[in-house]
Amino acid sequence: MGLRPSGVPAVMTSPTPTPSARGLHVITWGCQMNVYDSARMGDVLRPLGYQPVDTPDNADMIILNTCHIRDRAAEKVFSELGRLRLIKEARKAHGQNTVIAVAGCVAQAEGQEILARAPYVDIVLGPQTYHRLPEMVARAARAGGAVIETDFPAEQKFDFLPDTQAPQTPGNHTAFLTIQEGCDKFCSFCVVPYTRGAESSRSVASVLAEARRMAATGVQDISLLGQNVNAYHGEGPDGTIWSLAQLAYALADIPGLSRIRYTTSHPRDMDDTLIAAHRDLPQLMPFLHLPVQSGSDRILKAMNRGHTADDYRDIVRRLRDARPDMALSSDFIVGHPGETDADFEATMQLVHDVGFALAYSFKYSPRPGTPAAGAGMQVPEYVKDARLQALQQVLRAQQDAFNATLVGRSVPVLFTSRGRKPGQITGRSPWLQPIHVTGPETLIGQELSVHVTERLTNSLGGVLEERKVYA
Ligand code: SAM
Ligand code: SF4
Image (cartoon, rainbow, N blue to C red; front, side):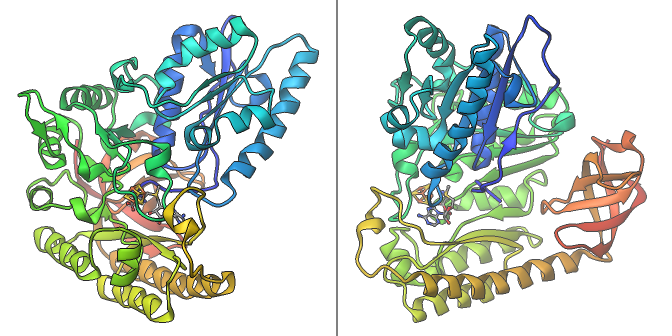
């Protein structure tokens, strides 16, 4: 998906460092943007001698990069911190110091509360300040007390970050690249405008330079990231403000970048130029994560989404006119305050009308400080449960049906890793499904044509075809 919220920790891993180096272990929760941020924190700390290590047990510094989008996010952080405290104490007993840093959106939202409840934490930093990490590490060491940096600084962190260094995926054929951050849309249910701050875009020059560096190291499939990525408005080399569409045309000129994706988009910012770019650029993948949240105009209004269900249907129609193989993915929230059975039926109708290839659906969960949390007419939990189950059943059937349409067809697959079974390699289709084939590892990094033969639970199986898609 786009900015996939998940409770599944993704961890930066690599071999144990040489004794002179310092070990860094980053635990990442939440969306792809956090994955990108974790890699960049590694870049920032590398000049200080920090090298990634596999486990927190032999790390001189542990960063917990947190996500605030779900219920009980803070409690999960405190529970994880309890585990890290034991590691810190065990290492201390052997004369080893461990710096614990809490980063990301929970750090931004909870700030001082983290230090009050977990005084063994050394650094608390928000998503906009991690370019200052080296200085924070030094301050924490000097002061022997905790450092907290959760302001929204005047400077743009991207102007102060070193060049990207760390491969984000094995083999480095796919990568995330953050181009835009923050949000000014203030949906009723969402914490992002409060934790990530106002919308801001990186300059075109800095995005293109990073994309060229990635392509030079073998990246072929690039995902541009932003909380509202299609609201991108970066300063262009000519001094004018460039849109995401203009940026996409420039990225498509970079040799080696054969697949360009962007996520997460807002329906309000899906303009004609971006839709035209999907028509013109084969590199723009025919798979778009475009969250709609609800199919009821009443609820969309209460959510402050700024569009109707028919606006969404119209965008999908224009996208499919421009690119007939376009598949859609979405996010849904059931049980927003005030949602009636009729509103929920409108959501089911929209799902039926659009037909999604993939979707993420959530029960509304009140986030402190957001308008919906204090609203009346909260929907009982048992009603949310029933609606979520009904919605997920239909969405799962649509996902299966979409995957089934590929069986018997030839699709281009960019191979990125070994498969789970011996002798297998795995790659992604343009629509992001994992596809497994029997083949040698030497094909990893190549985009090849695969004849899809079977639909598996969350992936597809196929056989390699003779015809090569890209060099
Ligand atoms: N910017 C994107 C957009 O406009 O749709 C999504 C951002 S949010 C990080 C990812 C998803 O989490 C949202 O699309 C929404 O479905 C879900 N979400 C956010 N706040 C939520 C809440 N309070 N309760 C349940 N789901 C929520
Ligand atoms: Fe949150 Fe809405 Fe902004 Fe998306 S558009 S990040 S859901 S406030």
